[in-house]
Image (cartoon, rainbow, N blue to C red; front, side):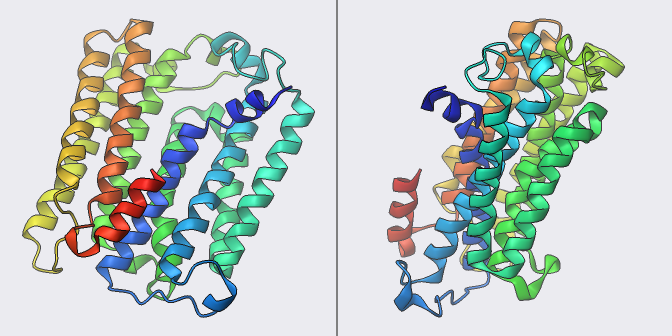
Amino acid sequence: MGLKAYLEIIRPVNGFMGALTVLSAVQVANVFYNLNLQFFWAKFWIFPHRFFEIVFISFFVYFFIASAGMVINDIFDLEVDKINKPNRPLPREALTVKRAWIYTFVLWSLGISLAFLISLASGILALIFSGIGLLYAARVKVLGILGNLVVAFSFAFGYFYGSLITSLERGIWGIPLMTWLFFVTAFMVLQGREVIKGMEDIEGDKLREVKTIARVYGLKRASIIGASCNFIGIISFTLCWIIDLFSPLWDPKLLGFWFIPFYLLGVAAVALSSILIIWKYDSLKAQKRSSLFDKIGALFGLIAFLIGPYTVENVGITIWLWILI
């Protein structure tokens, strides 16, 4: 029961990618509203400016809570993973269920505690996010289609969280249009990936009677639905660029030079995923590759959103974010 098992079970790449959505939403709100995010008790804190405080803490809030969700998901999926994912820590007995529960509690405690350091509202949102993770693993996942929606929402939830903790007084209607488009893009691409993963796991899902699209409607229809979700994500991603380019509502533009190369890479990866899954929908190898391409496309999209708002005028923050990445 070494450190490797504890690190592996949280799937840190997934948590890292999700945490980037929070950073992206914080910075878009900061730039869009030209907020003065000075930290009112800065002399007692390591950060002289509230922007950096929110960025730093909110990143780990999402990461810890999402990691806890990964662990609890594996606890409830133990029997299924013995078939679908036998090399994961719990099926191969690199970690006991008891230790996994303790680990979940520690991760949730860390994430929620950090969330309350930002604000009361941030802490409440973190509690809701944690509850969604538990509910999904225990009850919702077996519903298949609804479970896919919850996973996609949980990943994209970081955009709402980042916006709300940055400019709470504006409420949900104060979330910038660009952030809504970011949310739709992430949600649809992740929904497409979840549908494709359901195709991969069709045999093991029989154990828990998980009603995935692949099991209910067949592999061919599932491939079309997964590819369609990807396509909607690409459209939303493209609208971000078009609306920002021609909108008279804000100046300077939110998406600068850095957005374009990662936009192109992200679109190419998600498009390749869609073509592959429709072309070879009944091939397990193609399903796994398609799922991977969606994940790569989502990462490129996150990087595009993360560094897109920054230009020469704030090159210092750009460099800092690159170091973080």
